[in-house]
Length: 169
Image (tube, rainbow, N blue to C red; front, side, top):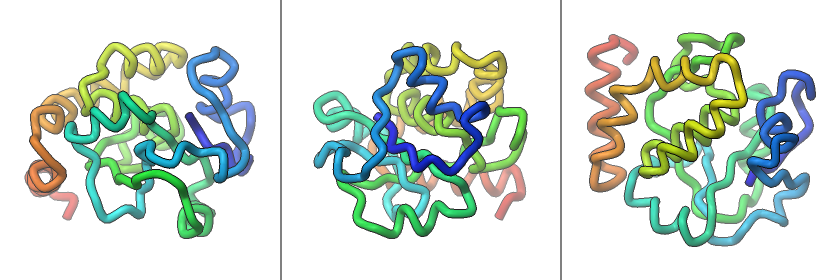
């Protein structure tokens, strides 16, 4: 499921395209989000990990689709569900190609699904975009390592190592 804040160009919006293909459900109000779902929130203090898989299987995965300029305002309000931030992943989309953490909605969903062990579902979402495979190519090693972590703390340690290797920090 995706909360769509209607802040981006509808022609470039990855969430709307996924919705047109029937791959996600889009809601326009935060109150329609499932109470116990995992919500991808870049401002969360807890990292997403494979330990979140059972909750996704039972309650779902939610992305919040809003402009990066307005994200903090949208996300600082009450968002239903359990917030998690994705670990370091690199954008494969044409607009933010190669930029750490500047993911589109489809990249965020696919990254979370891959980490949680739903690789086929992640590939299905990305297959709608000509550049979708690029995201997996750029992040293959990171996604594989994050996927074997036991919990959020291990994901954070792996992320720290990736950042040191890439000299991001």
